[in-house]
Length: 406
View 1: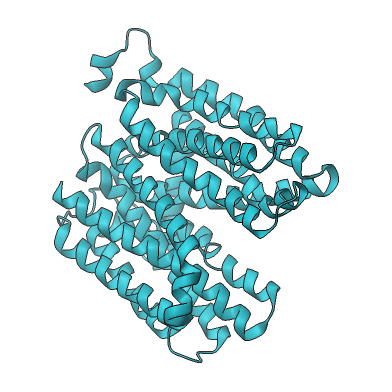
View 2 (view 1 turned 90 degrees about the vertical axis):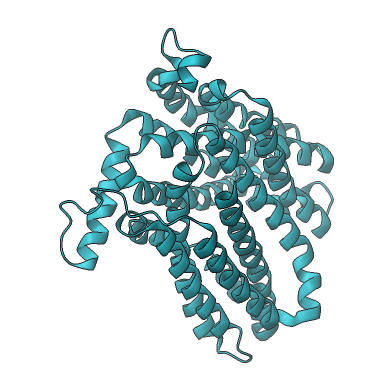
C-alpha cells in the first residue's frame, strides 16, 4: 500500500534519527561537562517533555488536517535540530531546543495514530501497528548498538545534523506520499476561542471520552501495566553486577526486551487469527508478568535475557491489539487527542514503574524487585482484564469469526 509505505518510511527515518540523537547528546554533554548527572538529565529531556506535549498538543491532530500536522511538526523539528548541530552551541540552549523538539513529536505521533485507521482498513490496521512496532524496536537496537561507532566517525554534531536531514526526508515522504484528508467533522464543536482554551477543552474531551467508556478505561489500564513490565530495564545495571557481569551484561539485558518485542509483534500479527486478537488482550497482559516473577530464583545472564525477552514479546503483542481496539473505539473527532493522552500516560507509567522498581530494589534486592514488579502487574491487571472480557464485543455470546470480520 503506497500510502502506508510512505508513512512507514517516514517513521523509520525519524525513529533512527531520534535514537542516534540520544546517543549523540549523551556523548556531547559528557565530553563537555564530565558530569554523569548532567548527561542523565539531558537524556531524560528526550522523553519527559512528551508527557506535556501529549496532553496539550495532541488535539491539533483533530483540529487540522493530519497530514498538515505531521509535515509542519517534521519541518519545525528539522530546523530546531539543525540549530542544535551548530558547533560550540551552548549546552543550555541545546537543552531548551531539545524540549521543543520533543514537544513537537507529540502532535506528529497523535496525527499518525489517528490517520492509520483510515489508511489501513480492516485487519491491515493491526498488521500496520505491528510493523511500526517492529520498526521502532529494530531501529532502537541498531542505533544504540552502532550509534557510538558512527559518532566516532561523524562527531556528535554531525549526528545531530543527520537527524535534521531525517526530519526533512520524513516531511517530504508524508507530504507527497500521504493522501490529504480534511479534519474530522465536529472536532471543534463547542471549543472556546483562545488557543489555550482550545487545548484544555480538547484535553478534557479526550479524557472524558476515555473515562465514560468502560472498554476504553480497561484498555488504558492494561496498557499502563507496561510501566511495570519494563521496570527490569531500569535495573539492568545492578542486575548485571549482581550476577557477575559488567557493562556488556547490562547492554545485553537492556537489549532483551526490545528484541523480544520485535519478535512478539511479528509473531502476533503473523500467527494469531484476527478474530482472536482482542480476546487475548487480558490473558497476554497477565502472562507477560509471569517471567518477571521467575527472577526471584536469581537466574543468570542468559536465562534472564530469555525471561525478559518473553515479557517483551507478550507485552508488545497485547499492547498492539490494545492500541488497535482503543483507536477503533474512539470517535474520529476525538481520536487524535485520546491517542495522544494514552501515549502520554504510557510514558508517565514507564517512568513511575522504573522508579517504583528502583525503590523496591533498595530494600529487597534487585532480584526480588523484578519479581515484585511482575506480581504487582498481575494484581493490578486482573480487574481491567476482567472488565475488558465483559465489555469486549468479541466475547459476546454467539460471536465468532464471521461476526468479528463483519
